[in-house]
Length: 143
Image (cartoon, rainbow, N blue to C red):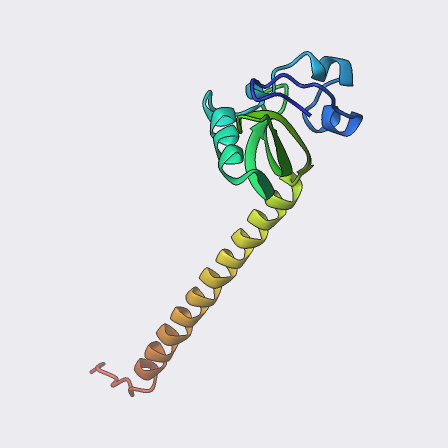
């Protein structure tokens, strides 16, 4: 749970672990806006939440406490005051960094497989052309 200004009000051990904090207490001392890669990342998130009131399976890139990028899926709900202003943000997050890395590796392997198939097809066609030359009889030109 946090405020629109980025102040963390509560968090659990899983949150601290995902973002690389040694403890929940240290995590609570950090403004959540500092965990976004750009300075306006948190403000963009808050603006989107104000428009949609809740975000389900919202994918975002954030930063661990040490600056390492991580990929997060968040499900959050905004609490609004009587004037309709965002007052509080509640939700939970999932670290999907490992899943994204595996998906990228799979995509790279599929690209390499496609290149391999293309190269083998070209080699086969080239071999067929060379085969035509080998069928031509060689005339002995020695006198």
